[in-house]
Image (cartoon, rainbow, N blue to C red; front, side, top):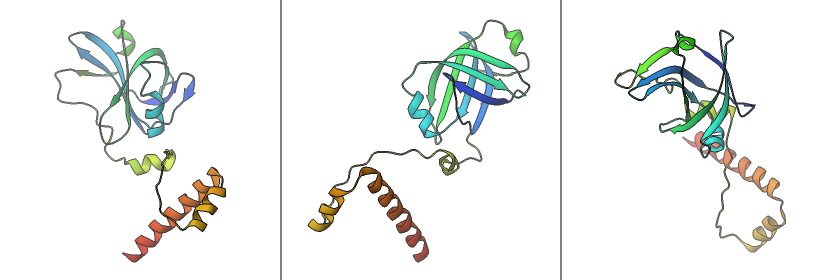
Length: 168
């Protein structure tokens, strides 16, 4: 079985949590497919891009350089599907072949959780809050810098979660 060691997209290495590389056979031809479980940050970065320059390093030392198309796979975990057409099947004789009529398909999600992924790359999201606070607290909040407020609220929420767990 062929194992992916690393993937570089547009010159930048990405963290891969799990991957499967295979040849997909359909009535329209053969494609090289690379399914990846990545972080939510990577999904955000590549979800609007149609084609990427991809370098795939295999565990046996081979390198595959190609322009690949991108699909975001629906599922519980963030997944990218990178694919490109292939002409010479002889270069890929040791790759698993999946036919469009086959029942088998790589299941990358088994044994990994979104929490595992977020331990490595935690995405940040902007949030707006509408609060009703005493005027002295509002005045104090307005004087704070955004970075300080982010730190305060992160610590406050983690402390609150910790206290909630202790009460259970």
